Each structure stands twice: as structure tokens, then as C-alpha cells.
Amino acid sequence: MNSLPVRLLAGAILIALAYATAADALPEHSPVPGGVAVVPLPAAATGAPTYRKRRVMVARFGDERFAIVGIPLSAKTGAHTLHLGSESVNFPVQDKAYREQRLTIKNRRQVNPLPEDLERIRRDRSEMDSAFRHFAAGPAVTEFSLPAEGPISSPFGLKRFLNDQPRSPHSGLDIAAPEGAPIAAPAPGRVTAVGDYFFNGKTVLIDHGQGLVTMYCHMSATTVAVGDQVQEGDLLGRIGQTGRVTGAHLHWSVSLNDVRVDPNLFLRSNNAAP
Image (tube, rainbow, N blue to C red; front, side, top):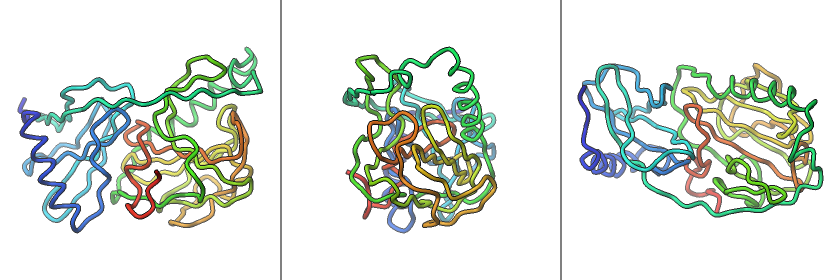
């Protein structure tokens, strides 16, 4: 099995990005837990690239191909491997420290669900997981506009404590806005799930192709149905405070190869969140 040394590949990534981003849009190369690695693919490689047994997005620019790889928040630093049939390519994952956030949730049932809530939570997760794991062939979508207007109230990756109890890291971006404010599709895609979930409240998921899926939570109302094709700017619903919340906002998640990653890495530079 052939593999490229991590140091050589890191240099190749920087060269490739300097060349490609001058004319084409790529996500920001940020090879950290919760980030995205933009990995140049060998010209002779023919296999579909996989990472952690999941197919990954491939973007073509001119005669070059790049794997756009989502890295889980739980990833360890060091060399990670992208498999391409009988070949492999190594890429480095660097460390990143995320700060803590402590929230007080008045509805204690939303922090410690009752036994009768657990079956609903299981069904919710199964439905969302099915949408996140889907891989549809098609052109690579590599940049987004912001889906709502407002300040960022909680950035991606925060180590969360709810009522002083540790919980999973914050796997999205929270945009604070008045209840009823519009939520728009950030790029073309297909609606694959619309639900009212225990933790996420009223929620929409959009499949943008090649394992890139976005999720919109805590809505007061949804205006799309499963199977709808949406274009950038189309109305998805309205800001709300359904599910587990402390106030009206949009929780926006971006999933790549079934890994939640920082949405900022896909935002156009002129509207990136702070």
C-alpha cells in the first residue's frame, strides 16, 4: 500500500490551495478536530476516496482533484489516512483548543429526559443519522451563504455544560435573531428530513450532495417538505425557540462525510461569521 509522507503532503496542500483558491472556491483548509482537510489526490488514483470507512467529497478544479474531508471533533492529532482503493494518502491533523460554555436550561427534562422520552429521542437520532450518512453523487458544493441574519451567539466546538452537567460539544453555529425571522437555504440541495425533535425542535435537513448535509434547528415554522429541491436563498422556515433552547435562535449544523464540522469553513469570505 502506497502513502505520501505527512510533511510532503502538508506542503503539497499549501501549494495546491495557493493555486486553486485564486480562481475557484474551496472550503478553508483547517485540518483540526471539527475542521476540514483539503487533500490533493494523486493523478493516477482511480478509487473513490474514503475516510473512517465513509466516502468523502471530491472537488475537481481544472485537471486537479481534491478530497474535501470532514474531521470529527473527537479526532486525535497526528497522521490520518485517506484510502483510495489499493492506495492511501496521509494528511496531518493538528490540535485545536475549544473554550467552555455553561448554560442554564429551565426545563430540566431537556437536560435529563424521562424514561418515556428516550424512545422518541432514539427515533429522532435514527432519522437524522440516516440523512447525515447519505451520499449522493453530483457536483461538489463548496461554499455557503449565511442562512439567517444576526449575531453569532454560540460558535462551533464549544465544550458544553448544561446545568453544570457535561454534554457533547456544540456541533453547529448559533445565530441569534427575533422569532419569526426568515431562514434561507445557503446553497442548492434537496430536503431530506423535516421533523419536530425532542432536543432540536422543528428541524429541516438539506442534502447538498457528496455527503454534505446541513441542518436547521429550533424553528418556529417550516415551509418546505421532504423531497423539495431548493436553491440558494429559498425560504426554509422561521427562527424560533422550539426544543432545548435558552432563547430564539437558529442552530445551523454542517455535516461532511457524516462528521459535523465548523460551518465557517464553507462561508464566503465576505459574510463569514466572527
